[in-house]
Image 1 (spheres, rainbow, N blue to C red):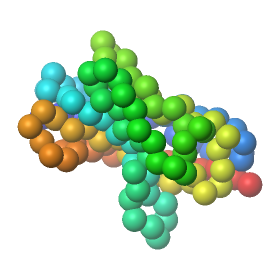
Image 2: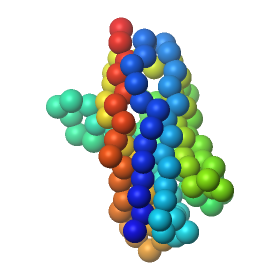
Image 3: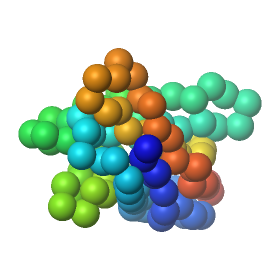
Length: 119
């Protein structure tokens, strides 16, 4: 089993920055990819970014490209999301997720952290 714990959310003014962290524990040796998703009130959960655990290749949603940066620290089993130039429409609960070797989709999810961007 894998446990994921997000941190770093909060309230920030538009144009500001936040850095989210996601710490993984448990059977993390089989990690092949980790990602960030978000869900705004009344909306479906949407993809934000992902990173391949080996090699570090990244991919972003168009809505955050150029503003958000995903990274990871393999030694600490931790993933980060640096969010700059935040907009009110970035307000959501942000979730981290982990995809393990042999899985075709994300099988582990964190509890989420709230990000609120005021105008």
